[in-house]
Image (cartoon, helix red, strand yellow):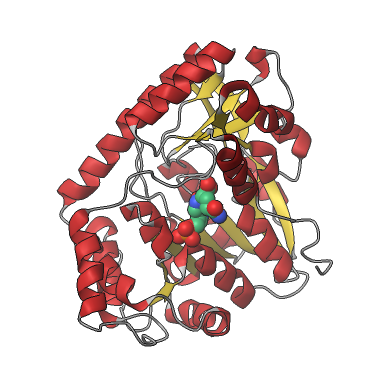
Length: 388
Ligand code: PMP
Ligand code: GLN
């Protein structure tokens, strides 16, 4: 393994899912739903396979039906107008969208300012591009509505230097569940414009926002459309994580750059699934509302159960993850805690420290996924309450 990648090793998701299997534990680690997305969309994939649509290399940018559906979705939901031919690119999941964007847009030595904790592939892709990550840490705050991780806008401004080329944003945020507010996003946008920065924004959890939180795409702010690459995922929005269909939207020059990188990573992405995802994006609002309501109910079961078991819970405003603080349990090392948890309680979780450069800052936090059937969450809670 070369020096750029040496520090990354095996992803925590693979390690923890293997541990769940070998110990027969309930896997609340890796974020994937334990029920598949809509039956009619599965049927659409079968139809595409059977009709021979996409069984050979689809077009490099993605099949026209899916590009049109992505553009229509961005317009319908956010009033963002993108040209399906020049401003939309289909990728092999959001993971490839992240990799191709960073590989295409960064020069070696560039600095990338990213929110910390950060999704693990960000750090590895910044490293593969030969660039340098500069984390801005979301800090835990306790307030009237509970506890949450917040961005310090002064810290963000201070992190930008003459070498900064790109801001890497993620909202709704994995692993904290924070949804950046309209005011915070406006401030990020102003900074990007003022310092003439590119922005890559990972919005894969755009449909999973709860209570009065609102998802506002960064690309909707003044001056942002031309400098922003926005990333979405069918895995996250339609519960088909195994299909690996994602997309980017952005101005032609940016999307064309990302496409240049993508063509040498995977060339194209899975054909038949693209046709099915095109149909998924056109589902009526009732689908998205039901998806959100279902995940909200699951959040409430797990968040309440974790609190009863003695964790401090950061109730997420978005995503399907809940971050907890283990210090009320008399623990302080999330790594040790997560490695022992299968034995102790028959449950698997993720230590947030893997998402930090500042491992110390992340040490006491542990993430649980709630995209699981309610009975599974209830059983996990029962085990945790018995163990602590
Ligand atoms: N970004 C974030 C923030 C994620 O949580 C995930 C998946 N868990 C991805 C990207 C990757 O998405 P995909 O499965 O579509 O590659
Ligand atoms: N994004 C998912 C998570 O955060 C996992 C994806 C993966 O396994 N790389 O859990």
